Length: 231
Image 1: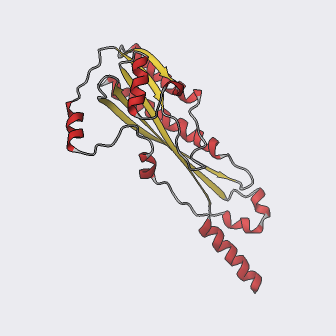
Image 2 (image 1 turned 90 degrees about the horizontal axis):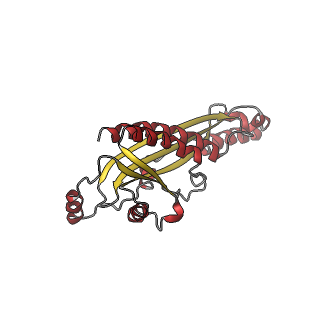
């Protein structure tokens, strides 16, 4: 009888302790932006006074904002070359349409800070008219599915797909005037990757995030291309 109570207790704790916690998208979005929040009427008036200032065919700087997340799961991602190639395709399309005359990548080593003014300064030093700032945040939610109860038997952890991992990547792109900080366009997209796996195996967090990141960037690039061409 005591053994039965023990098994039931283990199953209960397993189900409660390993249930899905979901994603706090609101909190994640707060970590993406680079612009200071508007806090008073004077700041609002200043924002309204700014006017578009781009030439017909402008020089575009592109900056990928570095990951500043501190949570141990979310901090395990970086911008890779294959990520940047997705937006390279958009840049080529914009050049062929005559919207952009030159695309200038900005590396993080020449940006003194991670705020908008520091990014604009780096873009100005490169002779750019506008700067595209791309930022992202990620999260991974691991939990057991309906087959997870079998893990109380120990051996099924080697072959039973009772584990679930959901990875979310939110990416944001903002296009700013280098001279006066006018905001031309903003776009956002999400990528969600779901994986069912055996507890003893399964992809690492960084691999799960990479798949969600690719999906988000592909969606964002299409949306951003439409927005800029129709400006």
